[in-house]
Length: 335
Image (cartoon, rainbow, N blue to C red; front, side, top):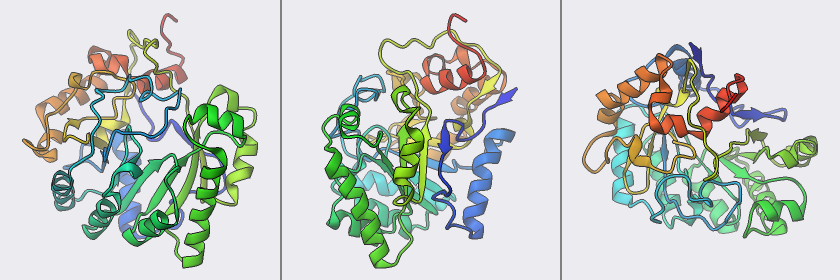
């Protein structure tokens, strides 16, 4: 069994990480479980982490993104209701939820109650609260609000160090404006004498960026606490990952669950899968996250992965993350 390494698609490139400032016992235990549970195929009583989709709306149209190609679930735009959100957090807090990310397919800073969401989670003692953003909406007011709410870390996606290429990748964003926003975030944080939110600059390592990536690291090293890249996944409507067979298990099924903005529960991120109904576990309006996590359906998914039969799940057979990881093992479609 080739047990997947947690965070195998994520690579820290600089000298530090956003986790270096966290050395308390609760945090270290959470990170231990994050890596050990998928390695040892341990199913805890509750997911370690929840990806909570505050909204699926986005203000950019990045050409490499599955949101743009509409190849990642249904596209009825919406924003998570605060009552529904609090229900999720309350259950998580009761069951020892360690971390949560307030983003999945959209730009979380579009949600009008994002700061309230962060504050509520921190008041409920969630250890690690963060989100991914394109950085376009960071301004002085929002930055101070994020600090006041207690955000632990923020991951900002930014391709390259050159205006023309960046704006080709981040369609709708202005290079100078976003760069100024990021520098302002660091300036305000330093002026206030706080360590949070920890700042991670990250890019999808597109083929065009591979040669210049050392310059990217050098460029951001003095501004961010961590500089990183994500492996590039092929997930347009034309990419077909079906038919890959491997004795490999996905780490997500032992770490995390997803709750979409409308309450739909998914067992994983379902990268590049157009039909979420293929693996949906119900809705938090009718069932609990814990029940879904321990359900016969979820355990069936895990058993198929443990036995090397993930390809029998149509969603996994189509998943761009699985295809990317299998390619690293030398397993490719039509190979």
